[in-house]
Amino acid sequence: MKIDLNYKYKDLLDILNHEAPFKPDIALILGSGLGDFANSIDKIKSISTTELPGYPKSTVEGHEGFIHFAEYKGKNVIAFQGRIHFYEGYKLNECILPVFITLNLGCPRLIITNAAGGVNTGLNPGDLMLNTSFNSFYMKKEISELIGISSIEAHDNLIKLPDEQLNSLVRKASLMEGIFLKEGSYWIGKGPSYETPAEIKLVANNFGDAVGMSTVHEAIFAATKGIRVAAISCITNYAAGISRQKLSHQEVMDTANEVKENFERLIKRVIELI
Image (cartoon, rainbow, N blue to C red; front, side, top):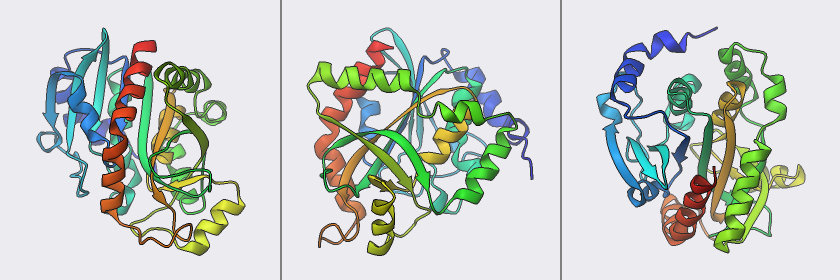
């Protein structure tokens, strides 16, 4: 069933178009434990998502629920501090709302960040991984419907996902900052439970490097609308079965906090380079 997102979010978009102080050069979706980045740049205006009609409430620790308009090195930035997850019970057309807002504000670039579990044994907690491809065993039907929501001939744009030009800027930024950036394929699961060791083996056997519960649908929707997309994972834990340690959201938060300085330096340099 086709959903008219312009109609569904008309009141919300009217408010944001009135309140937005500028047209953004780049948008950021901040993943679990990475929301503090918004406090490291000069915020011009912050809007609580509770003030926006129809904006889903985030129920996950580490997702504050703010949209920040900020400036860094002469570039206009919009940062979504708080993600909407599929596992929270929301529909996919609600989960991609930050991307839809990015589109409607005329922003041409999007960096999506996430916390992820390392599947590839070459990934360790605290690593930053540039997403070079996306995949899913669990959301094919929903993602197919999402492409339908976009209501355009999306395939040519999806071939370019993630955007190589933006990925090249991320690589350049990591070299300039002396940050060892790893690369790999990101796989999405529906959640809310972590993957089982058997599922992780399945991902590993199909060349998956990291797993999470976000990003893929956001990236696909953005690409189908012509937005340049890059995605960066903070590897916050070993995936199930890789180590004997029990998985927990607190571990995700703690590791993200430890790596936030490198994360902030990397993203700031990318913004400077665009």
